[in-house]
Structure formats: C-alpha cells, structure tokens
Image (cartoon, rainbow, N blue to C red):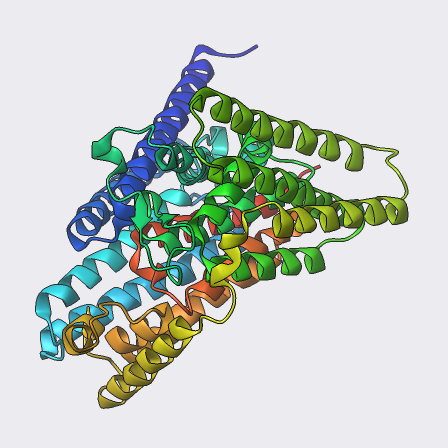
Length: 507
C-alpha cells in the first residue's frame, strides 16, 4: 500500500521533470532564435544563465543529499551521490575538467596580459563556463526515487531535458525554417532567414536557406546532424515515444532544409556520417538504416522539387503537396520500422537487399528530382577551397607566434579579419588553436575523445556516433564552433547517448 509521502514525492518528481522539460524547450528555442548564440552578447547572457541554473541545481541536490544522509545513516545503494553508473560520472567529470581548463586558459591570458583583446578573452571564459553549466544540466538525473535508485521507466525514457532539447532543435531547424522559406513567419522572427545572391557560384537559384542561424552552411550542418540523429534513434529497439514520433515526422523536413541551404560541405559530411552509421550496424538494424535513408531521400527530393517549383497562383496547393510528402515519409518510415524490427521479420539477407535497393532509388531521386541549377555549384567552382586554404596558411603563421597559450578570444578577427575581409577563420580547430594555443586544442581534443569513447560503449546507441561525426567533420572546414548552439546540440546528443547505456543494461 502506497503511503501519502511516497505519492507526494512522485508528484514532486513529475513536476520537477516537467518543469525541467519546459525550461529546456524555452532555453533551446531562445538560444536558436538568437542567431544560434553566434553573437557574443546573447551568448554571454545565455552562458551566465546556464552557470546560475547549474549552480542552483547542484545546490538543491546537495541539500537533499544532506537531508537524506541525516535521516538515514545507512549507506544507500550507489552512494549518496547516486553513482549507480560510475563510468557515466567519470565521463562527465572529464568533460567538465576540460571545459574548466579552457575557461582557465582564457582567465590566465587575462591575468598575465597575454591576451590581444581582453574583452573577447573574458567573453570566451564566460562562454566556456556556460558550456560547463549546460553539461551539468544535461546530466541532471530528474525523476530519482527513494534511496537514490533510478527506476527502469526513468532510465529507459532518458532525461526529459535531453529529449525536449533535441526535439525542439529539430522542429526549429526543420519545419519552422521551411515555413520561413515560404514567408509564413513574422518578419521580426524571419529576418535574415534567406541569403539572396545573384552570383550562381554562391546561390545557384538566387537564394539559400539560412534559417535562425542566419548562415546557410550552419543551417545545413545542423539539419544534417539532426537528420542522422533521428534516423539513428529510429533504428534502436527502445526509445522514448517523443523521439520516435520525431524520428517519423522530421527526417523529410530536415533533409529539405539541408537541400535548400545548398551547403556542399554539410552534404558531404552527412554522406560520410551515413556511411559511418552503416558500418556501425548489423542485421535488421542495418537494413532499417539503409531503408530509412532511402525512403527519406526519396521524399526529401520530391519535397525539394515542390519547394523550388515556380510559385503557382494557388499557394495552398503547394502547401498541401508538401505536407502530403512529409506525411508519406512519416507513414513509410513507421511501416519500415514495424516490418524490419518486428519479431519474425524477413530474413536478413533479403531485408538487406531490399533496403539497399530502396536506398539506391532514394539516391537516384536526389540526383534527378531537384532542379538542374542546384548542381551548378557542385562542379568547376573551387574558389571557396582555394580561399580557405589561404586562410588556414595565415592562421598557422599567426599560431606560431604564440604556440602554447594562443592570443586570447577573437584572435583571427583582431589580427587578420580586416586584412582578409573575412572575420572567421572557417575552421573550429584552427580557431581554438589561435585563441588558446596548443594547450587549449589538446584539452578540447581530449574532451571530444572522452565523449566518443563513451558513446562507442553505449550498446545499441553506438549509432549516435554518426551525427556527432558529421558535426566534428564539418567543424574542420567552417566556423560551426563559434555558435553556442553547436555545443548545445553536440552535448545534447552525447548526453542522450551516454545515458542510453544505462537503458541498454536493463532487462
């Protein structure tokens, strides 16, 4: 028989989880709408809010733990810290130490006067601390029960914060951005949604989708990473219902958002991530990965044809056709999952052959259905690569002047941006090398390695390496890491995958 105190604790836990989910939705929405936290002012405010939120949550948890220890001197399972999954805690500690180390480098540069621009270094310190606050919030275990034991339902569902954040980002980058493409959003929100350019080398059809991030390449890589994330979760046997719903409804809009951004680098990174995902899967899960990618490609290519067709007099017909295409994609994906992951499904060899054929058809549709002018940027225009090669050479020259600790925040912008007329070095790794030196880059690579190793050990959720690989690859050739939301998405995916190892360990 349940006691009243237990009911009250359950209600309190559900309320706390719901409040955390709501805060994650509001935070993710506000962050992505502020140009993806690219501007320093918005990023600093968001970072300070994350630090305050993480500190408050840690204080509340410490007070509750102290009360439990006083109430019951008997040691609790897993310890008072709830360390039921010690490896999860070790990974979080490594990541936090690395982020504090990067913030410490910026602080050290300020103290010893090694910073070229003091304000930029102070902002960098705050942003790294804010990223650490985000990591702490993403790894909060809401829904704990008596004696610090996480119930099977809570573990299987994962953190509501992670799920809410990832689904919110998927909706904003996919369907909402496409609505902005058609001019369906208020001007105050959709300002900067489109890059209008008559030069065919920059925009083959005269405009590209920039979305909330206000930069087509960033829009493309976010869409690609979220697309592979949802397809990856779609191949797992156990996932939260909201993630499965998003995995059915959002792949087609996200692929369309990727195509409308016309980002060649994001497209290549997405293809590399999809190929890596195929290497990580076996059997019917591999068949589902291939079939889902093929069906989403077919529907996305058709949606692209509809979106880029000459504007008809009846816009309602185009909207209906586009929604019908998205609905067909969702129904088809649901049917594929039900068929391929169901007990007693077709033989693996037959399923793989059929899935490979569907993938080939989807790729053929991508090659044939979009208007021919979309391919004008794919050949014979190598000015971008040559320009970035010269940027990288100059960045390495500047780094040699301060190889160990770098020159502080915004080094490229201060020392070379005006001279080149390009205010980003277009490589996240080189940017870290310039700002924090070899020490800072080594710390960041250690942090990324810890995340990758932890996800590699995450059972069936190892497939989440695919979207993370997409993000890490593209960051080498563009300034994705300058967006605070890039780190938000990276750690959101990583936290979801790391916590999934606990789900896979349950009966």
